[in-house]
Image (cartoon, rainbow, N blue to C red; front, side, top):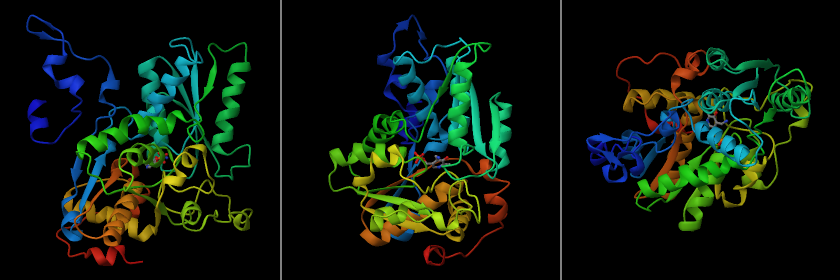
Length: 383
Ligand code: PMP
Protein backbone atom coordinates (compact mmCIF):
# COMPACT_ATOMS: atom_id res chain seq x y z
CA UNK A 1 0.00 0.00 0.00
CA UNK A 2 2.84 2.40 0.82
CA UNK A 3 4.48 1.74 -2.54
CA UNK A 4 1.28 2.49 -4.33
CA UNK A 5 1.02 5.80 -2.56
CA UNK A 6 4.64 6.64 -3.31
CA UNK A 7 4.08 5.76 -6.93
CA UNK A 8 1.17 8.14 -6.91
CA UNK A 9 -1.36 5.49 -7.85
CA UNK A 10 -3.16 6.27 -4.64
CA UNK A 11 -5.42 3.23 -4.69
CA UNK A 12 -7.65 3.63 -1.66
CA UNK A 13 -4.86 5.66 -0.13
CA UNK A 14 -6.92 6.93 2.75
CA UNK A 15 -4.36 7.74 5.42
CA UNK A 16 -6.63 6.09 7.98
CA UNK A 17 -6.09 2.82 6.24
CA UNK A 18 -2.45 2.74 5.29
CA UNK A 19 -0.65 4.94 7.74
CA UNK A 20 0.84 2.54 10.27
CA UNK A 21 1.03 5.23 12.94
CA UNK A 22 -2.73 5.53 12.82
CA UNK A 23 -3.23 1.92 13.75
CA UNK A 24 -3.17 0.45 17.18
CA UNK A 25 -0.56 -2.22 17.24
CA UNK A 26 -0.73 -5.37 19.25
CA UNK A 27 2.74 -6.88 18.97
CA UNK A 28 3.23 -7.26 15.24
CA UNK A 29 -0.46 -7.42 14.50
CA UNK A 30 -1.83 -4.34 12.78
CA UNK A 31 -5.54 -3.79 13.11
CA UNK A 32 -7.26 -4.03 9.75
CA UNK A 33 -10.47 -2.14 9.09
CA UNK A 34 -13.66 -4.15 8.92
CA UNK A 35 -16.11 -4.43 6.07
CA UNK A 36 -16.42 -3.69 2.38
CA UNK A 37 -17.25 -0.06 3.19
CA UNK A 38 -13.53 0.62 3.39
CA UNK A 39 -13.33 0.02 -0.38
CA UNK A 40 -15.80 2.83 -1.02
CA UNK A 41 -14.35 6.25 -1.75
CA UNK A 42 -10.69 7.24 -1.93
CA UNK A 43 -10.61 6.30 -5.59
CA UNK A 44 -7.51 7.02 -7.68
CA UNK A 45 -7.12 10.10 -9.83
CA UNK A 46 -4.99 9.77 -12.93
CA UNK A 47 -4.04 11.72 -16.02
CA UNK A 48 -5.56 10.47 -19.27
CA UNK A 49 -2.39 10.49 -21.35
CA UNK A 50 -3.80 10.68 -24.86
CA UNK A 51 -6.30 13.45 -24.16
CA UNK A 52 -3.78 15.46 -22.16
CA UNK A 53 -1.20 15.26 -24.96
CA UNK A 54 -3.77 16.23 -27.58
CA UNK A 55 -5.14 19.21 -25.68
CA UNK A 56 -2.10 20.53 -23.80
CA UNK A 57 -4.20 20.42 -20.64
CA UNK A 58 -4.05 17.96 -17.78
CA UNK A 59 -7.19 15.90 -18.32
CA UNK A 60 -7.59 14.04 -15.05
CA UNK A 61 -9.95 11.15 -14.41
CA UNK A 62 -11.43 10.25 -11.04
CA UNK A 63 -11.74 6.47 -11.26
CA UNK A 64 -15.12 6.09 -9.61
CA UNK A 65 -15.67 2.74 -11.33
CA UNK A 66 -13.22 1.36 -8.74
CA UNK A 67 -15.58 1.87 -5.84
CA UNK A 68 -15.73 -1.55 -4.25
CA UNK A 69 -19.43 -2.06 -3.56
CA UNK A 70 -21.36 -1.75 -6.79
CA UNK A 71 -18.50 -0.28 -8.81
CA UNK A 72 -19.71 3.29 -9.28
CA UNK A 73 -19.95 6.62 -7.43
CA UNK A 74 -23.36 5.45 -6.26
CA UNK A 75 -21.62 3.36 -3.58
CA UNK A 76 -20.86 6.63 -1.83
CA UNK A 77 -24.48 7.69 -2.19
CA UNK A 78 -25.88 4.38 -0.93
CA UNK A 79 -23.72 4.63 2.19
CA UNK A 80 -24.63 8.27 2.74
CA UNK A 81 -28.38 7.61 2.37
CA UNK A 82 -28.26 4.64 4.74
CA UNK A 83 -26.17 6.51 7.31
CA UNK A 84 -28.59 9.44 7.32
CA UNK A 85 -31.66 7.20 7.60
CA UNK A 86 -30.06 5.29 10.48
CA UNK A 87 -29.25 8.58 12.25
CA UNK A 88 -32.88 9.61 11.82
CA UNK A 89 -34.01 6.29 13.29
CA UNK A 90 -35.72 5.29 10.05
CA UNK A 91 -33.77 2.08 9.49
CA UNK A 92 -32.88 -0.78 11.80
CA UNK A 93 -30.35 -3.39 10.61
CA UNK A 94 -31.36 -7.07 10.45
CA UNK A 95 -35.01 -6.24 11.16
CA UNK A 96 -36.33 -6.98 7.67
CA UNK A 97 -36.13 -3.29 6.77
CA UNK A 98 -35.99 -2.99 3.01
CA UNK A 99 -34.68 -0.10 0.95
CA UNK A 100 -36.70 0.69 -2.17
CA UNK A 101 -35.26 2.70 -4.99
CA UNK A 102 -36.05 3.77 -8.50
CA UNK A 103 -32.86 3.68 -10.53
CA UNK A 104 -31.57 3.21 -14.02
CA UNK A 105 -29.22 0.70 -12.45
CA UNK A 106 -26.07 2.00 -10.79
CA UNK A 107 -27.72 3.14 -7.58
CA UNK A 108 -29.62 -0.13 -7.39
CA UNK A 109 -26.43 -2.14 -7.74
CA UNK A 110 -24.74 -0.04 -5.06
CA UNK A 111 -27.73 -0.41 -2.75
CA UNK A 112 -27.90 -4.16 -3.38
CA UNK A 113 -24.33 -4.56 -2.10
CA UNK A 114 -24.20 -1.88 0.58
CA UNK A 115 -27.59 -2.96 1.99
CA UNK A 116 -26.27 -6.48 2.47
CA UNK A 117 -23.19 -5.13 4.23
CA UNK A 118 -25.41 -3.11 6.57
CA UNK A 119 -28.17 -5.65 7.25
CA UNK A 120 -30.91 -4.52 4.86
CA UNK A 121 -32.70 -5.86 1.83
CA UNK A 122 -32.93 -3.99 -1.46
CA UNK A 123 -35.90 -3.74 -3.79
CA UNK A 124 -35.23 -2.01 -7.08
CA UNK A 125 -37.48 -0.58 -9.79
CA UNK A 126 -35.84 0.19 -13.11
CA UNK A 127 -36.94 1.01 -16.64
CA UNK A 128 -37.05 -2.00 -18.93
CA UNK A 129 -34.97 -0.32 -21.65
CA UNK A 130 -31.77 -0.27 -19.61
CA UNK A 131 -29.01 -2.80 -20.26
CA UNK A 132 -29.81 -6.32 -19.09
CA UNK A 133 -26.40 -6.63 -17.43
CA UNK A 134 -27.70 -4.38 -14.71
CA UNK A 135 -30.98 -6.20 -14.00
CA UNK A 136 -29.27 -9.61 -14.10
CA UNK A 137 -26.61 -8.35 -11.75
CA UNK A 138 -29.25 -7.05 -9.33
CA UNK A 139 -30.97 -10.43 -9.29
CA UNK A 140 -27.64 -12.17 -8.74
CA UNK A 141 -27.05 -9.91 -5.76
CA UNK A 142 -30.39 -10.98 -4.28
CA UNK A 143 -32.24 -7.73 -4.81
CA UNK A 144 -35.90 -7.80 -5.73
CA UNK A 145 -36.20 -6.28 -9.19
CA UNK A 146 -39.19 -4.86 -10.99
CA UNK A 147 -38.59 -3.66 -14.54
CA UNK A 148 -41.24 -1.16 -15.55
CA UNK A 149 -41.99 0.22 -19.02
CA UNK A 150 -40.31 3.56 -19.73
CA UNK A 151 -42.79 6.25 -18.68
CA UNK A 152 -42.89 9.98 -18.00
CA UNK A 153 -42.37 11.13 -14.43
CA UNK A 154 -46.07 12.00 -14.06
CA UNK A 155 -47.00 8.34 -14.59
CA UNK A 156 -47.50 6.32 -11.35
CA UNK A 157 -45.60 3.46 -13.02
CA UNK A 158 -42.53 5.63 -13.63
CA UNK A 159 -39.70 3.73 -11.91
CA UNK A 160 -39.28 6.38 -9.21
CA UNK A 161 -43.00 6.56 -8.37
CA UNK A 162 -43.30 2.79 -8.40
CA UNK A 163 -40.46 2.43 -5.87
CA UNK A 164 -42.05 5.04 -3.60
CA UNK A 165 -45.38 3.18 -3.72
CA UNK A 166 -43.81 -0.22 -3.00
CA UNK A 167 -41.99 1.21 0.04
CA UNK A 168 -45.23 2.61 1.43
CA UNK A 169 -47.05 -0.67 0.79
CA UNK A 170 -44.34 -2.60 2.62
CA UNK A 171 -44.58 -0.33 5.67
CA UNK A 172 -48.37 -0.57 5.69
CA UNK A 173 -48.44 -4.38 5.44
CA UNK A 174 -48.73 -5.95 8.93
CA UNK A 175 -47.77 -9.35 7.52
CA UNK A 176 -44.33 -8.20 6.46
CA UNK A 177 -41.39 -7.82 8.80
CA UNK A 178 -39.51 -4.54 8.94
CA UNK A 179 -40.40 -1.35 7.15
CA UNK A 180 -40.04 -0.04 3.64
CA UNK A 181 -37.69 2.91 3.18
CA UNK A 182 -37.69 4.90 -0.06
CA UNK A 183 -34.09 6.00 -0.74
CA UNK A 184 -35.17 8.75 -3.16
CA UNK A 185 -31.78 9.51 -4.72
CA UNK A 186 -33.16 12.28 -6.93
CA UNK A 187 -34.53 14.34 -4.06
CA UNK A 188 -32.60 13.03 -1.03
CA UNK A 189 -29.86 15.55 -0.22
CA UNK A 190 -27.70 12.84 1.35
CA UNK A 191 -26.82 12.20 -2.30
CA UNK A 192 -24.97 15.44 -3.11
CA UNK A 193 -23.62 15.52 0.42
CA UNK A 194 -21.80 12.22 -0.25
CA UNK A 195 -19.89 14.01 -3.01
CA UNK A 196 -19.43 17.17 -0.95
CA UNK A 197 -17.92 15.09 1.85
CA UNK A 198 -16.02 12.57 -0.30
CA UNK A 199 -15.51 13.06 -4.01
CA UNK A 200 -14.96 16.84 -3.79
CA UNK A 201 -12.37 16.88 -0.98
CA UNK A 202 -10.56 13.90 -2.54
CA UNK A 203 -10.24 15.70 -5.88
CA UNK A 204 -9.04 18.87 -4.15
CA UNK A 205 -6.41 16.96 -2.19
CA UNK A 206 -5.28 14.75 -5.06
CA UNK A 207 -4.77 17.89 -7.17
CA UNK A 208 -2.95 19.73 -4.39
CA UNK A 209 -5.59 22.42 -4.64
CA UNK A 210 -5.00 23.15 -8.36
CA UNK A 211 -8.16 22.48 -10.33
CA UNK A 212 -9.20 24.78 -13.17
CA UNK A 213 -12.34 22.95 -14.29
CA UNK A 214 -14.57 20.11 -13.21
CA UNK A 215 -16.68 18.36 -15.84
CA UNK A 216 -19.49 15.88 -15.13
CA UNK A 217 -22.85 14.71 -16.38
CA UNK A 218 -25.95 14.70 -14.23
CA UNK A 219 -28.35 11.81 -13.66
CA UNK A 220 -29.62 12.93 -10.30
CA UNK A 221 -27.19 15.85 -10.23
CA UNK A 222 -25.64 14.67 -6.96
CA UNK A 223 -22.09 14.37 -8.26
CA UNK A 224 -21.86 17.72 -10.00
CA UNK A 225 -23.66 19.56 -7.17
CA UNK A 226 -21.62 18.05 -4.34
CA UNK A 227 -18.26 18.45 -6.06
CA UNK A 228 -19.11 21.97 -7.33
CA UNK A 229 -20.14 23.13 -3.87
CA UNK A 230 -16.92 21.84 -2.32
CA UNK A 231 -14.59 23.14 -5.02
CA UNK A 232 -16.20 26.55 -5.58
CA UNK A 233 -16.01 27.32 -1.86
CA UNK A 234 -12.24 26.89 -2.04
CA UNK A 235 -11.52 27.82 -5.64
CA UNK A 236 -13.99 30.52 -6.67
CA UNK A 237 -12.51 30.59 -10.19
CA UNK A 238 -12.95 26.88 -10.87
CA UNK A 239 -15.11 26.31 -13.93
CA UNK A 240 -17.93 23.82 -13.46
CA UNK A 241 -19.11 22.27 -16.72
CA UNK A 242 -22.14 20.04 -17.23
CA UNK A 243 -21.70 17.22 -19.77
CA UNK A 244 -25.13 16.51 -21.21
CA UNK A 245 -26.10 13.75 -23.64
CA UNK A 246 -28.36 14.37 -26.62
CA UNK A 247 -32.04 14.64 -25.75
CA UNK A 248 -31.46 15.81 -22.18
CA UNK A 249 -33.09 19.04 -21.04
CA UNK A 250 -30.35 20.16 -18.68
CA UNK A 251 -28.16 21.69 -21.40
CA UNK A 252 -30.89 24.17 -22.29
CA UNK A 253 -31.56 24.81 -18.60
CA UNK A 254 -27.94 25.89 -18.09
CA UNK A 255 -27.44 27.66 -21.43
CA UNK A 256 -30.78 29.42 -21.78
CA UNK A 257 -32.52 29.08 -18.43
CA UNK A 258 -35.33 26.88 -19.77
CA UNK A 259 -35.95 23.16 -19.78
CA UNK A 260 -36.32 21.30 -23.04
CA UNK A 261 -40.01 20.97 -23.79
CA UNK A 262 -40.75 17.28 -23.39
CA UNK A 263 -44.53 17.62 -23.71
CA UNK A 264 -44.59 17.62 -27.50
CA UNK A 265 -43.10 14.14 -27.61
CA UNK A 266 -45.20 12.62 -24.89
CA UNK A 267 -47.80 10.24 -26.23
CA UNK A 268 -45.81 9.58 -29.37
CA UNK A 269 -43.06 7.84 -27.53
CA UNK A 270 -43.00 7.01 -23.83
CA UNK A 271 -39.57 7.70 -22.55
CA UNK A 272 -37.85 6.87 -19.27
CA UNK A 273 -35.45 9.76 -19.47
CA UNK A 274 -34.02 11.03 -22.69
CA UNK A 275 -33.56 9.76 -26.21
CA UNK A 276 -29.96 8.58 -26.10
CA UNK A 277 -27.96 5.39 -25.96
CA UNK A 278 -26.15 6.83 -22.95
CA UNK A 279 -27.24 5.44 -19.59
CA UNK A 280 -27.09 7.18 -16.25
CA UNK A 281 -26.97 10.84 -17.23
CA UNK A 282 -29.34 13.25 -18.89
CA UNK A 283 -32.73 14.12 -17.53
CA UNK A 284 -35.73 16.24 -18.41
CA UNK A 285 -36.60 17.65 -15.03
CA UNK A 286 -34.73 19.56 -12.36
CA UNK A 287 -34.24 17.45 -9.23
CA UNK A 288 -33.35 18.66 -5.73
CA UNK A 289 -29.86 17.26 -6.20
CA UNK A 290 -29.31 19.10 -9.48
CA UNK A 291 -30.81 22.25 -8.01
CA UNK A 292 -28.32 22.03 -5.12
CA UNK A 293 -25.54 22.89 -7.58
CA UNK A 294 -27.31 24.50 -10.53
CA UNK A 295 -26.22 28.06 -9.87
CA UNK A 296 -22.58 26.96 -9.63
CA UNK A 297 -22.55 25.48 -13.13
CA UNK A 298 -20.73 27.83 -15.50
CA UNK A 299 -21.26 26.07 -18.80
CA UNK A 300 -22.78 23.03 -20.48
CA UNK A 301 -21.59 20.86 -23.36
CA UNK A 302 -24.01 18.80 -25.41
CA UNK A 303 -22.66 15.41 -26.49
CA UNK A 304 -24.13 13.35 -29.33
CA UNK A 305 -24.33 9.56 -29.08
CA UNK A 306 -21.90 9.15 -31.99
CA UNK A 307 -19.33 11.24 -30.16
CA UNK A 308 -19.73 9.16 -27.00
CA UNK A 309 -19.36 5.90 -28.94
CA UNK A 310 -16.22 7.18 -30.69
CA UNK A 311 -14.71 8.47 -27.44
CA UNK A 312 -15.37 5.14 -25.68
CA UNK A 313 -13.43 3.40 -28.47
CA UNK A 314 -10.68 6.00 -28.36
CA UNK A 315 -10.15 5.54 -24.62
CA UNK A 316 -9.61 1.80 -25.08
CA UNK A 317 -7.48 2.16 -28.20
CA UNK A 318 -5.17 4.86 -26.91
CA UNK A 319 -5.18 4.42 -23.14
CA UNK A 320 -6.59 0.98 -22.28
CA UNK A 321 -9.44 2.61 -20.40
CA UNK A 322 -12.64 0.55 -20.71
CA UNK A 323 -15.64 2.49 -19.47
CA UNK A 324 -19.36 2.98 -19.94
CA UNK A 325 -21.29 5.57 -21.86
CA UNK A 326 -21.54 8.34 -19.27
CA UNK A 327 -17.77 8.32 -18.78
CA UNK A 328 -17.32 8.74 -22.53
CA UNK A 329 -19.71 11.70 -22.52
CA UNK A 330 -17.70 13.25 -19.69
CA UNK A 331 -14.47 12.85 -21.66
CA UNK A 332 -15.90 14.51 -24.77
CA UNK A 333 -17.00 17.43 -22.62
CA UNK A 334 -13.61 17.55 -20.89
CA UNK A 335 -11.83 17.83 -24.27
CA UNK A 336 -14.25 20.53 -25.42
CA UNK A 337 -13.66 22.40 -22.17
CA UNK A 338 -9.90 22.13 -22.75
CA UNK A 339 -10.33 23.62 -26.23
CA UNK A 340 -12.43 26.40 -24.73
CA UNK A 341 -10.19 27.43 -21.84
CA UNK A 342 -6.88 26.66 -23.56
CA UNK A 343 -3.68 24.74 -22.81
CA UNK A 344 -2.02 24.63 -19.41
CA UNK A 345 -5.23 24.12 -17.48
CA UNK A 346 -6.14 21.20 -15.29
CA UNK A 347 -9.52 19.61 -15.91
CA UNK A 348 -10.98 16.88 -13.72
CA UNK A 349 -13.73 14.55 -14.83
CA UNK A 350 -15.37 11.33 -13.64
CA UNK A 351 -15.12 7.79 -14.99
CA UNK A 352 -18.38 6.46 -13.57
CA UNK A 353 -18.57 2.79 -14.38
CA UNK A 354 -16.86 0.00 -16.26
CA UNK A 355 -17.60 -0.96 -19.85
CA UNK A 356 -18.44 -4.47 -18.68
CA UNK A 357 -21.82 -3.12 -17.53
CA UNK A 358 -22.59 -1.90 -21.05
CA UNK A 359 -21.56 -4.79 -23.32
CA UNK A 360 -25.01 -5.68 -24.63
CA UNK A 361 -26.15 -2.18 -25.56
CA UNK A 362 -23.61 0.64 -25.72
CA UNK A 363 -20.56 -1.47 -26.52
CA UNK A 364 -22.51 -3.63 -28.95
CA UNK A 365 -22.98 -0.43 -30.90
CA UNK A 366 -19.44 0.87 -30.34
CA UNK A 367 -18.12 -2.43 -31.72
CA UNK A 368 -15.07 -4.50 -30.95
CA UNK A 369 -11.75 -2.78 -30.82
CA UNK A 370 -9.48 -3.85 -33.64
CA UNK A 371 -5.74 -3.33 -34.00
CA UNK A 372 -3.95 -0.03 -34.30
CA UNK A 373 -6.16 2.82 -35.37
CA UNK A 374 -5.52 6.25 -36.76
CA UNK A 375 -8.60 7.98 -35.40
CA UNK A 376 -8.21 11.72 -34.94
CA UNK A 377 -9.48 13.50 -31.88
CA UNK A 378 -10.82 16.39 -33.94
CA UNK A 379 -13.03 13.96 -35.91
CA UNK A 380 -14.45 12.63 -32.67
CA UNK A 381 -15.24 15.90 -30.98
CA UNK A 382 -16.49 17.81 -34.01
CA UNK A 383 -20.30 17.80 -34.08
N1 PMP B 1 -22.96 7.67 -14.68
C1 PMP B 1 -23.70 6.59 -14.42
C2 PMP B 1 -23.36 5.29 -15.08
C3 PMP B 1 -24.77 6.70 -13.53
O1 PMP B 1 -25.53 5.62 -13.28
C4 PMP B 1 -25.05 7.94 -12.93
C5 PMP B 1 -26.18 8.08 -11.95
N2 PMP B 1 -27.46 7.89 -12.47
C6 PMP B 1 -24.29 9.05 -13.27
C7 PMP B 1 -23.23 8.87 -14.12
C8 PMP B 1 -24.61 10.45 -12.78
O2 PMP B 1 -24.44 10.69 -11.43
P1 PMP B 1 -25.39 11.65 -10.62
O3 PMP B 1 -26.65 10.89 -10.32
O4 PMP B 1 -24.61 11.95 -9.39
O5 PMP B 1 -25.69 12.86 -11.40
